[in-house]
Image 1: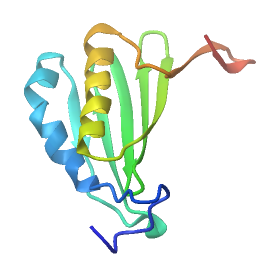
Image 2 (image 1 turned 135 degrees about the horizontal axis):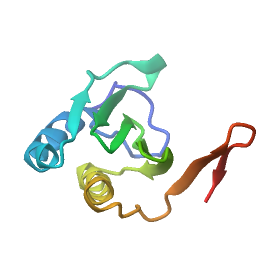
Image 3 (image 1 turned 90 degrees about the vertical axis):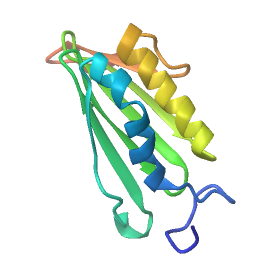
Image 4 (image 1 turned 135 degrees about the vertical axis):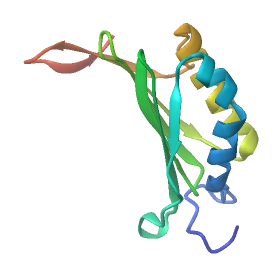
Length: 132
C-alpha cells in the first residue's frame, strides 16, 4: 500500500488495517477467556501510520501497536502481581501477525511467555521495575 508512510525496514509496507480482522477472527476464543478487545482506527502518526489495539480481562490488560514499517510492540500486564510482559516484533507480513497473536493467545490462556519477551515486575516503590 504505497503512500502510507516510509517503511523502516526496506521492502516492508505492513498492512496495518489487517489487525482488526485478525483480532475478529479470534473473537470466540478470546471471549471464552473473558478477554475483550478494542482496535482503534489507523492513524497517520506523523507520517508513519499505525494501529493500536487494547485488550483486557479480569487477569490481564495490555495493548498492541503495529506500524506500517512492520514494527510491533506488545505489552501485557498481569493484574494480580503487576508482572509486565513486553515484546518487540518485526512483521514482514500477515503471517507474522498471526505468530504474534498466537503468542498472545498462549500468554492469556496459559501464561506461556513469548520467546525473547522482556518480563518485569514491580519490586518496591523505591526501585521501580526490574527484570525478573
